[in-house]
Image (cartoon, rainbow, N blue to C red; front, side, top):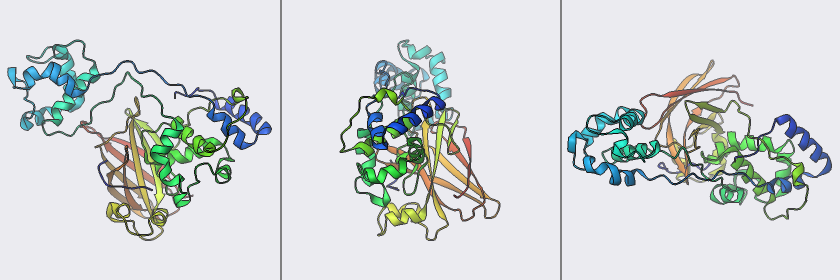
Length: 373
């Protein structure tokens, strides 16, 4: 499942009914490999970035250092942990409100009306972090990150298992291995990747992947090394975004994805002891243990959330309640949180996930219902 050391499309939307009718029509005319070849020929739509916003450091040096560098006019001095600790307790929202409106000797927008709200948030975050804090610099709300191609995603993330077939993963370009998986439809495969399956965590362990990017990566792996042919691409509409399901929640601007993988399948991928198998105190023995993996993203810009405090409470009417802190994990550029829980019964489980984001004084909660297949 790739647990490693701690510390670290806009697609065209159409109704599912239209898509299903279109795919049914194509399925009658073309083989599955042809459908995948046609799917990859449809270019994703991306939004152009609307300018580049400055970093927190740049804004501070340009507009804030005159007062915060020396503590002039009662401004908390950068590096003064005691002065900033009290202010940091207000959270980023509270401090940003003061900066936007002006407070005491500081004019609105710090005296620079050209600063965007995000630039002000970044400047505050930078000063807090230079004074003992550990906040995450906000991502732009106005500029959309260009969508990554299927090849970029596969090379950055998926090759670890799909290149060699590790843990039973279908190898890149091995259509004989992929076709049985897609016979029920591409959406089924995409949904499985989003939720996590076998030894693969939710979204392949990369929390910032969009549903459409996951779809592109799967299609790329199916087609890799084969010739894409056909001139009837218009017959296959761009597939819609995945429907929400029980393993995905959006609460208070935060996307929360839950993945559940058996410890037994993880153990099979790590037959000899290594660092990954030692995480969370090591892989538990027995067939009743499962690894819970939580991926967090900001719903507006899909940026992964790191440095959050995450706790899971797993309850079952037979086995009772188990509560654990989920540990931060980093896989390449992906951020997620996980731990092992004992879940032996076939009766339904209620999983409560509590998330406290960095710089926030209030926690959010998400409830998931889970039952073994």
